[in-house]
Length: 372
Image (spheres, rainbow, N blue to C red):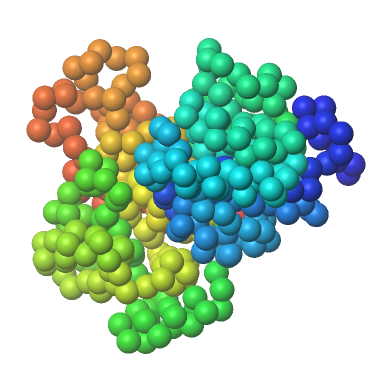
């Protein structure tokens, strides 16, 4: 099929591309992978550079079939992830301008703070988002930020706007042989049996997005009583959280917190029956690997961050209603909403462990008609 890039990208096809996406989370990166895939499909010979945070360096290496290079984001005014040191930013921009990018893509957010940085990269053309109703740097290359879209589709909409068609919206994560080797060493030592365990990941980047360890423990015990082995996962910084879950459990659990690389966690998930976690990076990893999951939303937006496949993945939690009075909250699960309504001042406004166990058993019993 003949590729047609819209007139918004003028003259010859861009050969040197910079993508600005300097967000900290694994989920932030994985949700942009479908856009990286579409860009590579449209421009197979282009040299594509991601400008991101230090942790993105290893992710770029794993996704070298889409991304060629990583440059460390130097910080910028209004971007909280990195302290803004003017001299460092000036030095970086001088280097970026010397690279003579043909196209800079601002995929960091709505553009209110980052557009000035993207424009100063000195690319022949710059494209991205701008906040609706605010200043637009170029009407043919900047799209009003699609606030109501899932995170994955926000970036695909930008590429479609530029004439680059989507190549599916599925996430992906390559697992290397070294990852399987690392998992095999763990499995033999900790007596893990493929397909007989459930991963419980109780951590999240902020406390207000974490369901309580006691609730996770109750869910883990209920599934252990069904004959499933429980594996606790988390980063080294989350050891106190997983320890609290383990101590609250009646059944034993295998605690792998801080003991695996990201690749080994991916291999571990791939052989799991189910993942139960908060809305955090590992939920997107499970979606990329087509592993059944229950994602608990405590204080984040499921419309933006929940997995797109609602058969294989259950998004469950409490969210403020959009069209109800402020004294009400709505419990929702999966694609259904308004299942039950509770008062905001009720002690029952948070999900119970029984709610999650019910969803877990139902999901474990389902067999999907399509191939993994």
